[in-house]
Amino acid sequence: MRVIQRSALAAFAAGAMVLAFGTGQAHAADADLDAIRSAVTKGHDATVKRLQDWIAHPAIAAEDRGYPDGAEYMAQLARDAGFQQAKVIRTDGKPGVFATLDAGAEKTVGLYFMYDVKQFDPGEWSSPPLEARLVDKPGLGKVIVGRGAVNQKGPETAFLAALHAIRAAGRKPPVNLVLVAEGEEEIGSPHIAQLVRNPEVEAALRRTIGVFMPASMQSLDGVVTVNLGSKGVVELELVASGEKWGRGPSKDIHSSLKAMVDSPAWRLVKALDTLVSDDGNAIAIDDYPKPRPMSDSEKQMIAEATRRRSEAQAKQQLGVQHWIDDLPWQQANERLESQPTVNIEGLVGGYTGPGGKTVLPHRAVAKLDLRLVPDMKAADAVAALKAHLARRGFGDIEVNVTGGYDPTSTSADAPLIQAQVATLKKLGIDPLLWPRNAGSYPGYVFTDAPLQLAAGHFGLGHGSGAHGPDEYYLIESGNPKVQGLDGATMSFVEYLYQLAK
Image (cartoon, rainbow, N blue to C red):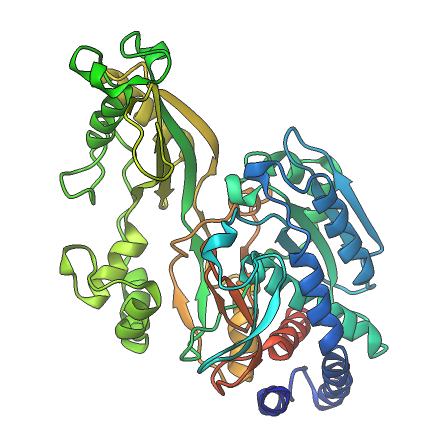
């Protein structure tokens, strides 16, 4: 498999030889890239080991696991990659990391990392989620399977590997870097603003031309999508309890008593049913914020993307047979981009172990996430939800918000985005522009006031399974349309050189 990956990397490099303004500068840039590419190849095994070691040290905010060690580990990774300073910044929640790399360059670029990962159930995995085993994946190549492999440690490790290779080649990064890393992304980034608004951090970010997050942007057919934003999100719990309600039991009791005692679990179910339409697909919360209608340019982006993307492959990868309302492929994607959602992540109440246990639970919890699109604010969505429940007679149900933030958008004309498009085209890739990622990340802290910076994601490579079992990141590609670890690493090198222009 290594031979396949090396030849793919060579082919990938062939289209990326002219990167500078004039002939002399082009030759200088070519010499830099040749030397760096060689260093990437030589450093492959060390990069794989670095990723495996990082996966073995998880930080899971929802379980209060791996703190403050996760932040210290992230800071050391930054120092090892050449950041002259990397410090842990305290917040009211989990600590963040702030690092700077001064290369003496004219331009400075911001980086957003997350060092935390989602929870996992080892029993659902084909290999232990913290062992980061190298596994052959049929039709794709050799992958690392582990929690955080693609979300987000694999792409972030590839970016750090680019810095290691630049230094090993005796070069300096073509831009200065400002890194902000948080440890609460997977619980809705409740304290990201405290990290970014730290005076020292904010001052450094103001010197940047924008902020990007390392990503793995290639689908299995090689299509690369440049996202111009992301939906916002609110994560919360609705809790129905006998204590708050004043009805039902204050502790679990025998289920036979349901004949004369109210059920908090049923109360929660009835409350949840008022939030959406009968099919669960339209939001029915009173006075809920209204989404901005899609623009003609956004519809055009989606039309072009759905023409080039495979619907059958998307359904297979997601394990679904139908879109909502059996919508055609293009209309399903328009709905994905334009509509907010109310989603039940999980329901917890009473006995959930093997067999039955005839109890009437005193407490039931629904874990929800609310996705938001432009012109919607997280605070407004929460306020509308609370008012709706009170108006419908469910004011006793607790609304516990654990995290969340507004949606984010960046113009396609922003230099940060234009450099992505230019880099991809020089690598022989015709990228798609996409209005916004249906997932979420706290880019609002960069794009909104006071910073008002461009923000986005970038990086070749492939991975899948985020938040689920058997999450993986491609290391050695057997698919000529998709880059493995070394190709992903070089894509970051190319992007940094393009940003320097």
